[in-house]
Length: 254
Image (cartoon, rainbow, N blue to C red; front, side, top):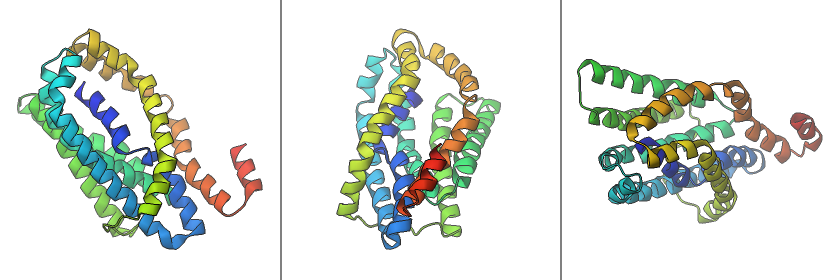
C-alpha cells in the first residue's frame, strides 16, 4: 500500500514532465538547440525541489494517511519508502529526457532491467538472511538511489546532456503550462489503473493488497509490446513537426 501512495506522489512530483519533456526536448533540438541545455537543467531543478517538498509532506502526514486506510503499519512503511521519491522522480525525468533525444536504451535498461533486478537481489538476500520486513522498504529506497546513480553516470559518460544547476523561469513557466494538463491526465490514468488497489486497501488488509499486486503484473505484461512502440512516438512526431514535415507526420500518424 505504501508503494501505491508513493506512486500517486510520483505523478504529482514530476508535474507531468515525463510526458512533456520528450516532446519539448525533441522540439527545441530542431528549432532552438542552444536552449536545450537550459530546458533540461530547469526541468531537473523543478522536479528535484518539488519531489523534496512532497517527500516532507508525505513523511509528516504518514500517520493521517494510515488512518484513511485503517492500517497503522502503513505509517511506518511510508516513512521509509518516501525517501525514494526524489530519486525515483529524477530517474523518471532523465529517462524522459533521453526519449527526447530519440533513445529508448535508458528506459529499457534502467527502468525495466536494472531497477527490478537490483530490487529482486535485495529481496532475495533479505529473505535468505531472514531480515525483518522493514529491510524490504529500505531496499526499495536503496534500489532507487542506485538506479539514479547508475543512470546519471551513464548519461554523463555518453555525454547525453550536461548536468548543471540552473533555472530559466521563462522556460520553466512554459514547460509547466504544457506539463500540468498532462499531469492531470496522468492522475486520471493512475486512478483508473489503481482504483482497485486503493479500494482493497481501504476495505481490506495490507496482506490482501499485497497478494493482489503480486498477481496483477502478469496481466500488465500483455500491452508491453504496444507500449514499447508508443515510447518513441512523441519525440519523433515533435521532430517532424519542428521541421515542418506535416505530410510525413500525417503518414507517420496513420
